[in-house]
Image (cartoon, rainbow, N blue to C red):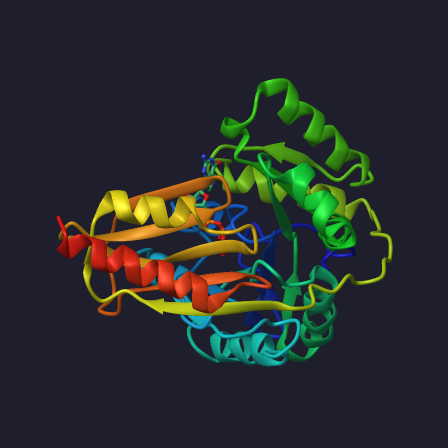
Length: 324
Ligand SMILES: Nc1nc2c(ncn2[C@@H]2O[C@H](COP(=O)(O)OP(=O)(O)OP(=O)(O)O)[C@@H](O)[C@H]2O)c(=O)[nH]1
């Protein structure tokens, strides 16, 4: 995963007569802030040439793709599965497609929030030679407000992300006191073997700084440990159709009442006549006006979700609008 690679691409290298393409994986658990970071990394065009994004969503319908399409880059979106299991092979297909198109110099791959880092890195490393691209630095994003809880709940899954990252980003530090953020940063740094850990609010870090710092460590030959991949068995997704106009208070109540089995929800809703992007991570709900695709739906991801009960609550939320 780029650990033996010389450095980040700062000018258009030429390999076998073709400009080199560099692939950065962005991984992190559901809702950690991967898309938010990506939007920040894409804020300024890369002077070396065109950038593209490949985004993978575990849920049945892509929300991140719709968000990222507002940027200046090509976006390939794969939903309904994970590059590390049911969509194995799709990642290399996507990279092949980009390689055959215009001369893309950089690709950010946003993994699904339940992807196992090691399962992504191995096929990428295998495909790099044949498709003439370089891998890394890769970035792992962590949610400061949920790090301890997720570390207890997911254990090795999170540690695997730390081991396989060239750089870690402790995001959402605005949601915790400064000393708590520093303590978590130290915990992650303790597992990073000298690779850098940055803190951020809404992924707001300088792209060149982030990637160059990581490339420096990668070039220094840091090696990740090898761990046993931890499964996220039983994770499932569900879609709730949300065609009708909804009352904001009812929507907020619906999210407040979601059980702990729901780990993530997002989608486009119409709330009091306004198209909105709904983003839910346990303990955090954001409803923001957004240019929305035609379909209004909410994607839920979790483990052991009682889909009938949740759908019933959502139907009640929809009905409540007509009563006001
Ligand atoms: N308060 C706060 N919220 C944040 C921060 N970064 C992201 N968010 C919010 O957290 C939610 C999830 O962010 P995303 O960037 O969509 O997370 P993700 O990792 O791409 O999510 P998945 O693709 O579903 O795994 C959104 O509502 C973001 O606006 C942050 O630093 N602080």
